[in-house]
Length: 179
Image 1 (cartoon, rainbow, N blue to C red):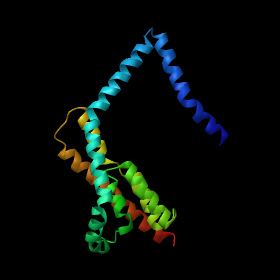
Image 2: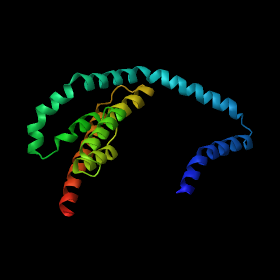
Image 3: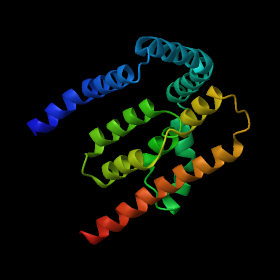
Image 4: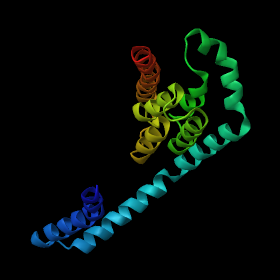
């Protein structure tokens, strides 16, 4: 385990050193190239900043308003019929929107139900098999000025839904197999 920690600690400095040495061998002005890249990065941040503010505002409104709990209460009868655990529904709703919000919800689920519980492993699998779709699409499309995203959005949300349903069904199958 010590060797892994050692490699982890030296990996980034070694990569930076390799890049610098390669730039010097190619007779490139490495510092000027670095400054140009930093400037381009800042320009990109300024370009996508309004989109990020809008997303964070929407996430905050969803989290603090109680709409999420109301919506889950509303669809609980449907969830019971399709045998989808309502305990992971806040995670299923927020995961496509916010990575940090979904981490907080997953942590809460695991604290309440346990890491090795049926609900805990479903939450962990949802976290690993889905993406922060709306955030990713908003950042990438706004950075290159794409406005028409409906087909990408539909396909990405269907992939998230598939990951969530598969998470529940796989763990349901595995829990029956091992009990």
